[in-house]
Length: 403
Ligand SMILES: [Zn+2]
Ligand SMILES: [Zn+2]
Image (cartoon, rainbow, N blue to C red; front, side, top):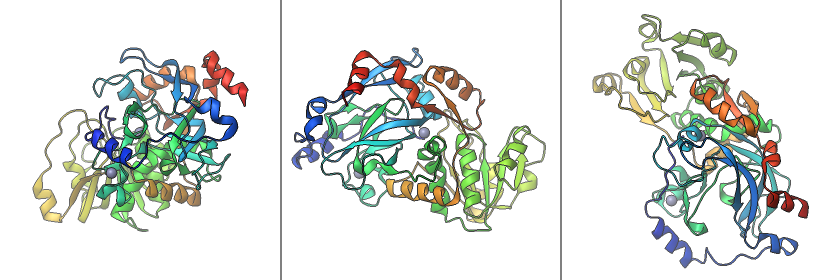
């Protein structure tokens, strides 16, 4: 997913607009909850206090429930590479402390008075965004990930509708999110294995849908990590014939186990040349700087290559001659809008698609990060959020007992 951004361009403008609409007026809360909710609640979490701290137990405050808010008891949260970059300061200075996590699955604990789409106990999810302006052209088109005024990311973002506080993510016991940015997670999906759908799943589903993949079309997937393995599963579920490109011969069998029809081991001499003009679409998930021209050469007329990860360094320039001679498109894609994310979850339930996951407890998070950096995960770690309870502070525990 994209790098989080600590400051939203135009945030002041958004805040003024929202205030004009009364968006920041005091919120009524339901009877017995009023006292506990007047200033929000403390919950146990894991996060970084500096770029060097690693992940440590923290207590964070979730805001008081507003009429359009949903409070969620978090069961699982996937570990995304973005989380590692953000908490280790690799994307620049952050507001500390920072609780990462944007692949959240849980159950509704409480709803605000105006919430109509969700009920207590329902299985729900939260992905990479928790709000957007709701007024710009892109928000009105349902592509909130491209909000002109900058959307509010699930962690590390300024939240203009909530007093400019910095959002904190899903490595926590609970989260409060406005109804519009909460997803219905079908009960048919295993909740732990569904968590990575909220980032890795939608990030790969969206370009497949945008391209309009149809049964029988040929899709290439470059890289077989968290994103790549979801791309293979989703493209197969759409009926495509899938070829995986990987540098590692060791991953060939794993790719076939995921459903890949073909595997090209790119470290073998001449391997890519043999795949020329064979594909309709290439989904490139590699985050390290690399040359995309050999992958453009695998495309047929009117093919497209979508790049999903943001490389940390410069890359070899794209050869325009390749694009021109086969009318190719070279594009990028960023997660998906809320409506499309819901469509993806429903699609996954219908087709039995989830991520391959390895559950970790809170005290294993730092080890899991090290293993992610080494590529030692098949294919996504997921935090069992119930293990956070034992790390909570006294106040968080006490609140637990109040209800
Ligand atoms: Zn992510
Ligand atoms: Zn917008």
